Each structure stands twice: as C-alpha cells, then as structure tokens.
Image 1 (cartoon, rainbow over the protein chains, first blue to last red):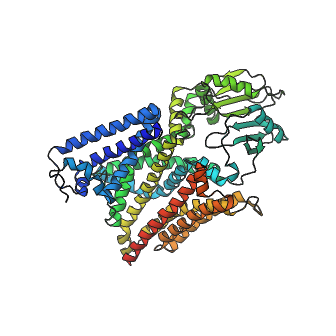
Image 2: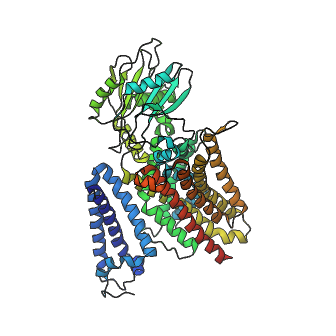
Image 3: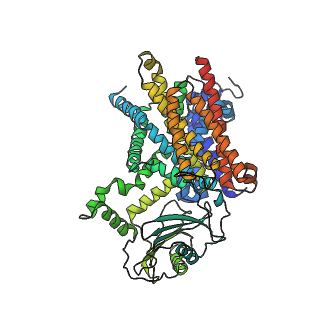
Amino acid sequence: MPLETVQFVAVLALSYLGCATFALSQFRPWRAVGLGKRRPHSTGILRATGVALLSAGLAFALARDGVEFGLLLWPLSLAVAAAGVAFTLAWRPHWLRALGRPFAESRGQVE
Amino acid sequence: MAPFRQAMMQLHTWAGVILGSLLFVMFWTGTLSVFTDEIDRWMMPATRLATPAEVPSLDALAQKALELQESDLQYIGLWMPDSRNPTAMVRMKSADGTRSDRQLDVSTMTWLPDPETAAASYFLYPMHYSLHLPEGYWLAGLCAMAMLVLLVSGVVVHRTLIADFFTFRPKKRFARSTLDLHNLTSVVALPFHFMITLSGLAIFFSLYYPTVQRAVYPGLSTREARVALFAESEGRREREASGISASLASLDDMYERARVYWDGRPLRYVTVNYPNDAAGYVTFARLGGDRVSMRGDRVVFAASTGEILQEPKLGAALAVQRFLSGMHQVHFDHWVLRWLYFIAGLLSCVMIATGYFYWIEIRRKRHREANLPGVRVVEGMTCGSVAGLIAATLAFLVSNRLVPAGFELGPLSRLYVEVLVFYLVWVGSFVHAWLRPQRAWVEQLGLIAALGFGAAALNWVTTGDHLFATLTEPNWPVAAIDLLLIASGFAAIRIARRLNRGLQRAA
C-alpha cells in the first residue's frame, strides 16, 4: 500500500478514535455504549487521550501533505470522523465498548 | 429564552425558511461541481481519452485554430489537457464577436465532435454561482451572506452544542431525529460550512464591493477601476489592437521562457489577444495542481516580438483572495481532498434539508388544526427543492444518454433538450409535491432511484462502458459517476421505504 494511503488511513483512524474518546467523556454517549458507571477521574483522561489522538492525526496530515494541504485535510477528515462517531453511537454503539472498557468501573460488565 | 437568543432564533428560522431552497440549489450544484470534469467525461463520451503524456506543440495548436476560422481572429485561448480533462480546449473569438469553443484530441490533433451538451461545465457549475439568472451572482451573494448569518445565529441558538456534539437519535420521533441530524451536520462540518461560504463571497469581491475599487481609483468607472486593480496587483494586461498587422511569434519559445518563472511546472492555459496585430499580447498561466492558491503566475509576452511585457506578480491582498478562491474551487490535484469536499458538501445539503424538515414537523399539527397553509406550502417547496432538484439533475443525465447526438427538433438540439428536461422535471416536482403532499416524497424518491439506476444502465447501453469495464480498465471518472448514480438509487430506495413505513403507521 502506498505510504500516502497509509498516512491518510492513519489521519482518518486517529480522528475517529480521538472523536470517539471525546464522545465517551460525555454522559449520553457513555450511557449509549452500555458499560455501566465510569471510573472516577476518567473524564479528564479520556479528553486528554482525545487531544493526543487528534494531535497525532494533525501531525500525520501535515507529514503527508505539508502545511498548505494538511490544514485542509485535517479538519475535513475530522468532520467525516465526527459524523462517523455519531452514526456509530446511533446504530452500533457496542463497537465503541472496547475503547471505553478501560474507563469503566467494573471491567467486562456490560449493562 | 434570553431575548438575544430569542432574536437569533427568529433570524435563524426565517432566514433559513426563506432562503433555504436557494441555498440548497447552491450547495447541491456546488457539491456536484467538485466533480465537474468527471461529469463532463460521463456526458461527453467522445472525450473519454487517455491523458496525453506531453504538452502538445502550442504553435501547432494555434495554427489549428487559425486554420479553422475564416474571419479575423481576435482571441485564441488554449487550455491544456490535464489529469482530469484529456482534451485541449480551444476558445476563439473572431472580429465580428462570434465565439466558439472546440475540443481537440491532441494525440491525433483532430477536432472532437461538438459534444451537444452543456454538461457540468456549462450548466451545473454556472448554476452554482449564478443560478442561471441575469445578474444571478447578486442573489448568490445574498444567499452566501445569509448562510454566514445562519451559521452564526445557529451557533448562538444551539445551547447544548458541546453536550450534544455527537448526538443523533434516529429512533426518536421524526422532529427530534431531524433536529439531531441538522445539529450534527451543522456542527461537525462547521469549519467547512464557514470556509466554503466566506471563500465563495471572496471570489466575487470585485463585483460585490465595487465602491472600494472606485474609491482607490477615483475618476474611473467601475469597470475601469476593476481593470486598474488587477493590472496593479496581478500585472494583468489589457490593451487595444493597433490596426498594424504582424505575425505571431513562436508560442513554444515563449512557453520555454515562461517555465523558467515556474520552476519548470506545466502550463494550464495560454491566451493570445489580437494574434495578427502588432499590439497583440500572449498570456501564459501555469497549472496550479500542486498548491491551494489559484494563482496563475502569469507571464505576458508581446505577440509579434516575443518580448516579455510582464513577469509574475501578485499583491498581498490578491494573494489572500487567490488562496481563498483555490480553497473554494478545489482546482488542485488532490483526490482525497476532492472526495472529502464532496462528502462535506453532502453534509451541507443534509443540514439545509433537515432544517426544513424540523420547521415543518414542529408546526404540522398546529397549522392543520388552525387551517394555516404555511406547512403545506413549505413542505411542497422543500420536496421540490430537495428531491425535485436531485431528480432533475438525474433526468438531465438520463436525457443526455437517451437523446442521440445530432438530434434536432425545430430549434431544439440535444443541448437544449437536456436543459428543458431538467427544468420540466424540477418544476413538475413542485407541482407534484403540492398536489400530492402525502405521497410526494416517496414517489419522488422512487423517481430518483429509477433515474439513478437508469442513467448508469443507459451509459452502458449507449457507450459500452459498463461498470465492470470502467473499474478494470480503469476509467475512474466514468466509474465514479456510475457508482455515485447507483449509490443514489439505493439511498433513495432506503429512505423511501422508511418514509413509506412511517406513512403506513401514521395512517
């Protein structure tokens, strides 16, 4: 697979995971995933992880396309990823369980 | 609700209801314009050629144009083939004002037949910014300003923007789920909506803000001030013919010297004004696929001597405008971004349509009980301007494949038949929506599905380029359009079935 394709997949995947961790730090999406109670202080960790993932996505976008195109690629990928997370939460919320499980109070327990 | 937020809510609601239909037309045609060249290839089968490996001889191209025209040519424009358009476009204007555009297959140096279609370049794309109305760019500008107002007021009225950032509840009642979808598509693509609207306004800055130019160049008319502005900030040259005849110097030699300024990057177009006059001039602009900014780095030569009249030049303000133009028009060679623009454009269309749906749903019961016509009028308008416009676009493509080349019926050639079909289907969809409000959506979605599948099938039947062939060859432009047509058919069926179930439950 060409490097450019790998980098774009990385931008999209990191944007999706970043948005998903942000979503899991919020009340309604966390409840939709069905992992019971969230561990104390996990909101901040989830948001910090989200920032790190989105920043890594930006870094890949800049590495792939440079500043000029990278700064267009990143927000547009982010828009698609954010919409993807919202649709996942609407139709397939259990797909995000693996991502949220480390932050659930009782591991492995599903509501 | 706080008075300010209440005022913003009123502004958001009514600006959206009044201008939403026009905004949908602009965003739908704008979204399609991302693939203007690809739609052109689909609608002009004779242009489905391999991209030539080398830039053809410019002297040979100019000679072809000069041979074609019997009367004195005032202007020749040569647009080079590129990765998305394998033909050379030759634009000519003769002394009597007659204009003609011809496409040339540069590998054989033969003229291609008249495509007899406006396709995307001359119909869908101009509709995006002019709505095909006289002075329509003013209306488009008003819509763009309204869009900015809608975005800002929308952010103000959306109280739970962060908390509901990822909220979409499709199983809730229709009003709730459409509001969720409206908020979601607005918020996730907010930077895109804002960027595309603002940059759209910036493209026509010289038309929308004429007083600024007149203030900078006092004593000149609006047009003269605009010419002076571009001459000063971009080095664009305009001069009249001298009446003294002279022969055209070698364009190929000029091109070699122009490339020095472009670090060897290829040519986008060359224009020759007054090719047989001593005051004639030649303008070269480079291809800009490797950068966002839509600047040609123009080099201007004297047509008869080949002397350089103007080196590349761009003022700071115009450099910003060129960047915004490039960002809006997606002229660059970047397929990932092109698809992301397309998806973001579709999100904009969904945002506008769901705004209407929400307005209708929360008023439906009250208007019915009070016997008010508002919901019926807006519902018909929404159906016509959303489903009707999509059906009209697909009918435009279907008519292109159904009506044979060379068709003439009185004054109607295929080009006019296609446009006529587009408007007939579009106007008909409004009439249908107002006459059959209960079934309009389901029936028009059914029409979209039939037209989508029909267009892809007709492409196969009339050109032999079926999807398997275009995917394996590969002929990506044609394959992509066929795939989008088929996808639109499936999407329309899926939505129609859901609506139909909803209607059955309501009954």
